[in-house]
Image 1: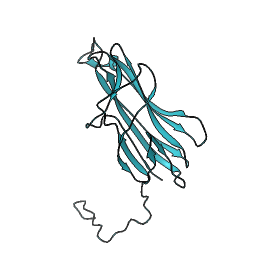
Image 2: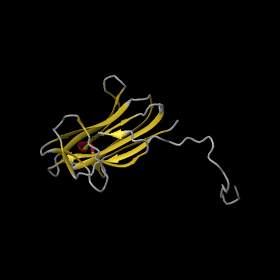
Image 3: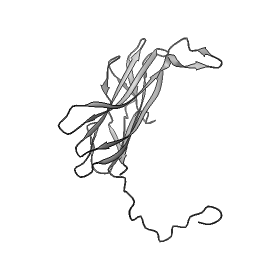
Image 4: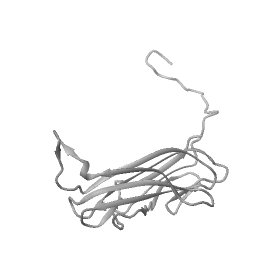
Length: 178
C-alpha cells in the first residue's frame, strides 16, 4: 500500500478466499407477462446469464449436494397494469422449499402506487402504471433446498402483469457467501 492508497497485488494468491459458487443470475426476457389480478404467481425467468453449477432450472435455484451454507439471494420485478394510471400495489417474495418439505415465504417486499407524493404533500390522484419492487436476504441453506420467486400485482383496472425484456426489469440472482 503506497501513500496514494494503491495496493500492489503482484504475485498474490487467493488462498483461503471463498469462490462464491454456486452462483446464478436469470431474468425474464418477455416484455409483458400477464398474470391473474391480486394472486401470487410464480415468476418466470427464461434467460440465464450465469449458472455456475447448473443449479438453476425451471425458475428455481436448488442448492447442489455438498454446497449448503450461507447465501445472498436477491430478486426484483417491475409490477404493474396494462392500463396507464391504474396500478395499485404489488409484492415480490422469496419462497424456500426444504428438501421434502413445503414452500414458505422467507422474505417479501411490497410497493404501493397510492403511497406516492410529489412536492409538499401533493398526492397522486390517479394510480401508477408500474413500479419496481425488490427483495434481498442472507439465508442459510442446506443441500437440495430450493428457492423461487412469486409476484403479486393488484390493479384498479387493466390486466395485472410483470414486465421483462431487454431492460432486465424482472430478475433473480444469488451466490454462496460461506
